[in-house]
Image 1 (cartoon, rainbow, N blue to C red):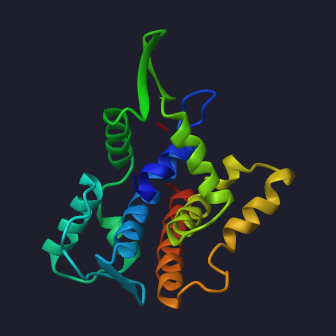
Image 2 (image 1 turned 60 degrees about the vertical axis):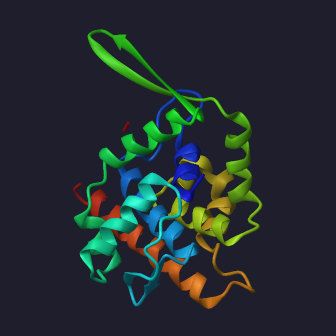
Length: 210
C-alpha cells in the first residue's frame, strides 16, 4: 500500500460511499506518487523540480508508471508543470479505485437510480481503513507526514475534521513537517510537493466526484 492508496481510503466516506474532495483527488494522487518516489529515493525533489535518481520500480503499477514516464521524458520539470501536463481527474481516481477493488480493499457497487447509475465505494478491509486514520493522527514516520501533508494540501482535512471542532486537527496537519528531527531534505521534498498540489487545487477552485 502506498501513500496514494491510503489517501483514497481516507477520502471514501463510509456513510454514502462517495469520494470526498473528489474534484481534487486526481492532483492529490499525483502528488502522493511523487512523495512515494521521493521517500523511496527514486526521484529527487529540489528547487521546485522533480528528477529521476533511480529508475528501478518500487512494485506499485501506478507509481511505477509515473516513474517510467518521468524517466522516459529525460527532463527535470517543475512539479506544478508535471502535474498539469499529466491526466488527472477522473482517470487517475478511477485507476486507484480499480486497483484497490482488485486487491479486495474496497468493493465497487453500481445501482440504477431513475435511469442513472449510482456508484458506491464500500470499505471491505476495515482493519486497513482504521490503520490509515491512525497514520495521520499518531504520526510516526516520514510516510505518515507525507500522507498528512497531502490530505491538507488537497482540502481533504476539511471533510475529515470539519468545523470548529476539527480546527486544531487541521492546524496540526498544516504544520506536520515542522517537527524537530525531520531531515531537511525530506522536509523540503514534502513541503514542495504539498505546495505544488495546493497551487493546483487553488487554480482549479478559481475555475476549474466520483
